[in-house]
Length: 197
Image (tube, rainbow, N blue to C red; front, side, top):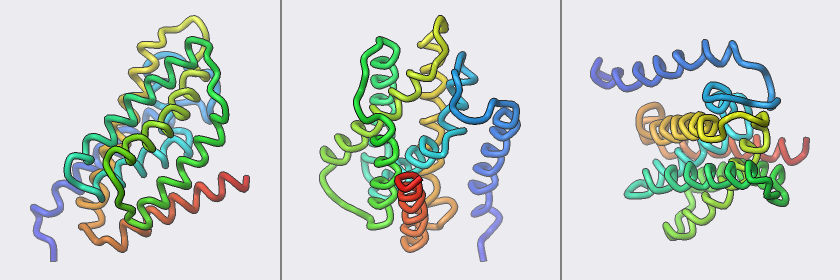
C-alpha cells in the first residue's frame, strides 16, 4: 500500500499534464507552418516522433542516473536550438526525417535494453539526434516571425517532455526496471512503425 504522501508527486504530474491538454486541443493538427511561442511550444507535443524521442531521452537519463539526469536533457535542448538555428539560416541538414525516425527507434531501444556506455558517447548520440529534431522545428516556422520566440517555445516544451521522462521511472513506474524497459520497448516499436510507414 502507498501512503498519501507517496501519491502527491503522481498527482502533481497528472495535474501538470492536464494543464497542457486544453492548449493542445486548440492547436492546429499536424506539422504545418508554425509561429510564435505557442506554436513553438506545441510543435514537439503534437508530433509523435518529437514527443516520443524527447520522452525517451528523459527516461534514459533517469534510468542512467547520476549527472546524466540533467546532462542528457540539456544536451538535447541545446542541440535542438542549434538545429533550429541552422534551418532558420537556410542551411540544409541531410536526412532530417530519417534521423528523427531513427532517434525514436534507437532511443527506445536504449531504454528497453538499459544500455550503459560512456557519458560522452551518450551525450554525442543525444545531441546528434537533437540536431535533426531542431532542424525540423526551425524549417516549419512561418517566415517573417521571431525565431527566438518560436525557438524558446519548442525548447521549453522539449525540456518539459524530458522532465516527464525523467520522472517516469521514479514517480510512475516506482523504479521497477521491467516497466521502464517495457516503456522503452514501446517507444522503440513506435520508431519501427515510423520506419515502415
